[in-house]
Length: 337
Length: 262
Image (cartoon, rainbow over all chains, first blue to last red; front, side, top):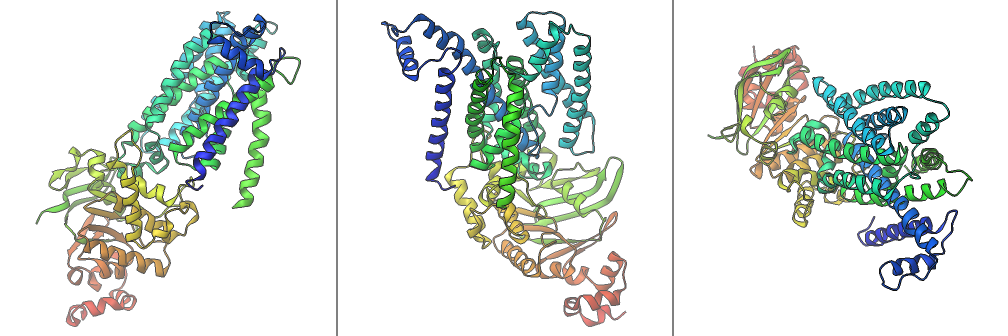
């Protein structure tokens, strides 16, 4: 990409995200015309008010805003964590839950729902479960010497993920099939329908805190895609840098999963698309992933609440949209090279 | 003479497997030292130990007269550059991106490369005659071009010593000659070079001194004419001295005739 094309590309990406956001606010069971959106926005910050029916302002600010804002943050965070993981694990097929964060959070949430705990507590247990799972994987991997540490980490993550998955399945079987099981299933497939402003205010700072190290280390992360010894010879403290990034990605992913459930595919597909657009340099890949991830999740969530009479779980739609797109992308890139 | 890197009575290997012991050698400023040794003699293990990537089992490595154990990775990388064997690479970084990674030890932790860093990267590529590769994608260039890119990356560290692991392996004839010419030129710029090679004629071409690494020990260290004798090489590689002479015509030009008459 030429230097001149870059600002235009970023501008186009911002414009596309804005268009998605406007659409997300406008469509739904209670459609709001884009003009009314603008009037509602102006009314929000003027003493005169919007002059719109109270129902319009309620839909825009109390119902759609938390949901769209959650979509922006969760999508951005999952895509950024996926981009960081694909680089540092030197594997373009890695997603942010490769080290077991989703499985740990899933087991925590499943257990919370099974025990009939209130939603806030379920989210708390999910968050802690995600962090614990990755901490255990990291500890196991650090006990194994004389192997490629990256490979050991991924294998430990896959193994623990399978174990936690077994726990989730067990709870699903013994849970009440009429009250608990649908809740569990819906949670495991992800969704933004239950997000309240308070949930968002509690989790968004954690997600953003996880993004901060990625943003600060945006250039240095590139060196982790080299072999460990090569990066070390270039002056990088590989073990410490990897630990910081795993902690950051885990923190933000666990918070995202505790808010929205397990939304698959975004962390895998979006970084790929971003890399095709801006190349592998994380300094550009990170902002591109943030923008695309936010846009993709908000768009998918808008579909989830509009295409069918019932609310569809997000995980189903991200897979239905993401997987064919991914395959198309693979085929297209394959032809070019 | 002060050394850039010095090994003192070094034992190398892994906790459960000792690869070599009693290794002492030093590399002076601007000197080219070539390491010859058969497969499995521990060349790579010795390099890893000298680079501080593997702790010595005994003895010590000193860089600029300070024990390497006291050096941070970044401080070390500002003095010693490492050129691995050219690899395929995974993500489609540009050649400039790859060379800029050589600046990591000179860039603040939270910063990205500056215009100054980019100028240095461009200069390093130009010095190796591959300035035109700057915007190319590393995964799409040839093996020889990749090797030169990795040398440029090590030069971007602005090191006093370059450690090169078989820089001519897997290169075609022309690229081998090109890389060796550049190694010779580095010496002219005051950069010391430590390189391993499987081809004694390459060592004879560029080395000020040659070290012979037999499995477990240093079998010789000194000027090419004294160390790389047909007998010593025959011992080292486990073949006939006559076969060595037949395969390496350059060797007979180097040796006084009476020396390999035996």
